[in-house]
Image (cartoon, rainbow, N blue to C red; front, top):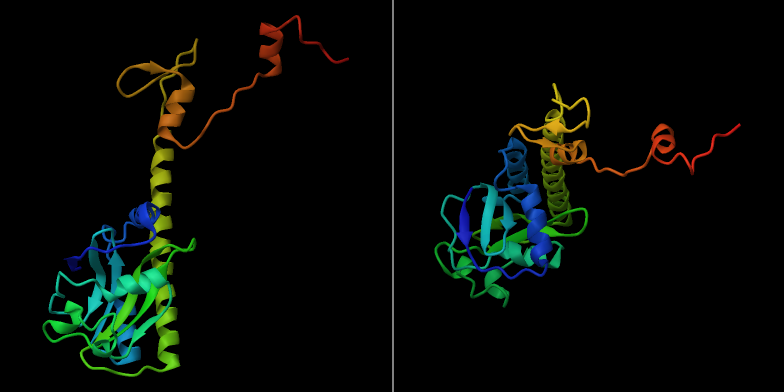
Length: 236
């Protein structure tokens, strides 16, 4: 995974970055599915480069890449930032002929990227996280079939990311539930629970600290008779 510092202005702001953190894309476990997807993308377009690009607040990183052995210029705004912002396929047949990219260090420095095609990685609620892209050092034309394949592969990337996110969240919830298993030292009188530090606390506080459960308070019929005998009536 390569990281390139590049100021990236995004329109999705704090909400997008919070969502990106939830996915833990760059910190998560490696998955060969991502490697297979970029290889399929490169094969579909017959390009020497393919990558899954993630756009953070001020950094552009690759989850995985194929054929990208030389680091990209750190001063360049990545093409994938444009793809993510427009949330649609971006195809640049010749970067030198496109005023948006002709002066980009990705084009002017080193061997120079001359062709780019990218599909945005968009969450179910419409937030862009990055892009699946293919690149070449030569200008080229693309077919509608290849573009359709790129769009489909980008959906596969998001499906894989969603699967990892849900799995991680479920694992976290299971861990919280496990914290309530075993023997709980509870007072026979007041029903307070002794925590791991040796302090006694109300059962509501203990459960809320160790799970996602929330309490609503009511009163059972027996307690109502005990504490409010003058306002409780028995049904005959």
